[in-house]
Amino acid sequence: MAEARQVDVVVVGLGVGGEEVAGRLAAAGLNVIGVENRLVGGECPYWGCIPTKIMVRAGNALAEARRIPGLAGTSTVEADWAPVARKIREQATDNWNDKVAVDRFTGKGGTFVRGTATVTGPGRVRVGDEEYQAGRGLVIATGTVAVVPPIEGLAGTPFWTNREAVEAATLPESMLVLGGGAIGCELAQAYARFGVRVTVIEGSPRLLAMEEPESSEVAEAALTADGVRVLTGVRAQKVAHDGAFQVTLNDGTVLTGEKLLVATGRAARLGQLGLETVGLDPSARFLSTDERMRAGDKIWAVGDVAGHGAFTHMAMYEADIAVRDILEQGGPGADYRALPRVTFLDPEIGAVGMTEKQARDAGLNVRVGYVPLNQTSRGFIHGPGNEGFLKLVADHDRGVLVGGTTAGQSGGEMIGAVAVAVHAEVPVATLLSQIWAYPTFHRGLGEALKPLA
Image 1 (spheres, rainbow, N blue to C red):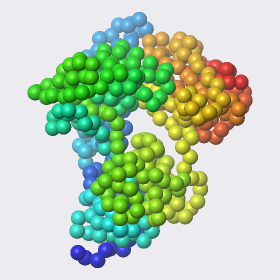
Image 2 (image 1 turned 120 degrees about the vertical axis):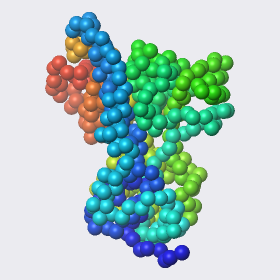
Image 3 (image 1 turned 90 degrees about the horizontal axis):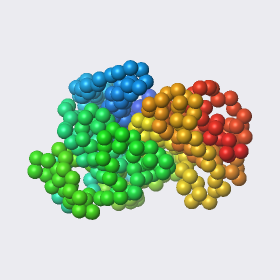
Image 4 (image 1 turned 135 degrees about the vertical axis):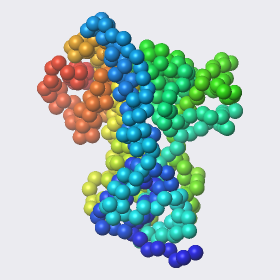
């Protein structure tokens, strides 16, 4: 094998976080190798955030048209998946081609290598027959993959993950969904609004198990209203496929569906990377990092692999910290207190920071403010589709918000105000003296703050 090529940095994985790190380091004049075995840009632009929100937007338009009776006249709605599939294929993903993203990276001066990387020692990476020695270090940004649970009979069947659900040019008559987290719920609602008979199977007692119980109630009510059958507290025990899927649950129920979507979470793939050659544990669920995103000596990890949440905004946030550290620019380190997240259902569920339970479990002196969205003036005006709530969680001893949830129309936009308050530790007293525009949905935050005085 030829002698290793000397470079400054090797970035392994060019998803959202890796592409950001590699591009910015290259633009700063470093000799950067960016390695990706699938598509540059990763899950988000091709099978995640962007295409799924195109699906959600289309489904929401259908739902809004169906709300016209009793509000503004009469309406008949005929759903057509074709324009949605066309927009995803032609406009959003270039038919799952990453030429634009590759050109964006190489245009900044980076060197792109298509292939699978193996770490072979400190600062050393092999891709195919080429070996690179990185003087400044390595950045690991290999993302996560959909977890396929070890259910009897599942392996070997043509089940879907989010990728197949997003790529579908035509829709099935029926679909079973394993998993009632954000991905399972969003795809279930979007598909149901286009006429697919959907059943969601969730092993936890509630949907969106990581969020507030009130969020779970809103999500279940919304899905049920769209004709989705929601089964919680049950698990798939056996799967069979003979042209259609049969799923046997642990309570003996047998469900059938044309397609089976597996949305039971995501996990990092660290085992194949060769991390043991640099003293890291390849069997770990995630790479643990310090506040500068360092996972080891001259090794940084950003995005899903760092285990702080599989969110595009998290990958971008951590990428910025790693870039500043590699370029020795200083600045603030990682702070996860005000992590915002949005479940793009209708109603949209925004959340930031701690849930009430997490705050209580942390031993805080908790106070909670809660306002149903339909009891606000704007909720009344809005009428059909005004389901939701605003919930604020405060640490009463310190007089600051530590979390909040904004569920309803524009829920993902409303959470921005709460995120600022949590991140900047704006005193509750200051928020109580704020002027909230009327009649907006977010004015309800002013009402939710009152019990926290």
